[in-house]
Image 1 (cartoon, one colour):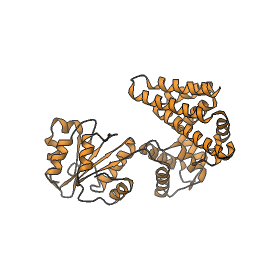
Image 2: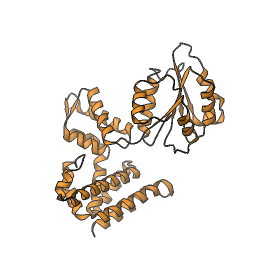
Image 3: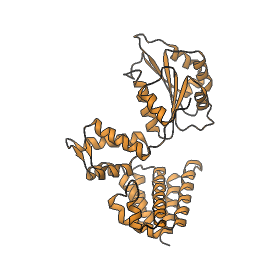
Image 4: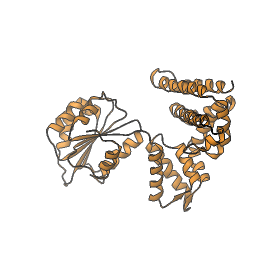
Length: 339
């Protein structure tokens, strides 16, 4: 069966014993891994316990299909439920999974961890059609989910966070659950005994990971500031920032420009339109965002989004150097901003 977001959350809190195989997959690999770990620990507290946890890869099952049945049917020498963790690459292990489900093996839960799987995936189709199995999809956190994550981490560590700091985190986190959680944990450590986390704290920690430099890149593009763009983009790539992450940040920025332009068509001034955006634009960039709204027409914003989307596709599919593809697209938009 296919779990939606609500059913996924309910199942992870209280797993249904009739479900004997779970496929957790999606583009947000950090969230995938977090949910795999959460689910596995609800059955076995210590995932390093060799008597109660077995780990397999898709290639191991592909080369020896009986391995999955053997591991799932094994009995723990010390008693208790067992978990079989399967890391799936691009392998088709539908037949071994079907055999596992057909043999009605009750001693183990099989959890399959995978990246993004299309609806044509044989493994995904098998799990979705089975009454004894379930799929949980994991995609990048939306603002609501990211806000909930921030609140949860603060509660866990008995911290408060002011509104400006939270807004900054909402703007600069969210592409990957594991990365977001790691950055929040760094922020908690940085804050020490301090009870409330402020904007300066968030900027000091998240900025170290390149989030602020990505903002500077994107604003340099929409400002038409080629020199700043070249400097910040080169620095980001040296620090290991992904070209895809930069392109997606640019897409989000132009989508927000598009939304604000829509507010202006309803009669708001550019500054009023910016104030209407949720989450709010970080105060450091408000004036620049307002100027960009006056610079970019709706037609130009649409063309920019088309250029950025094509660049992301080319980074993934053409084999061309991703940094060069990203840089070329951003430079062309920087040029367009000046005309």
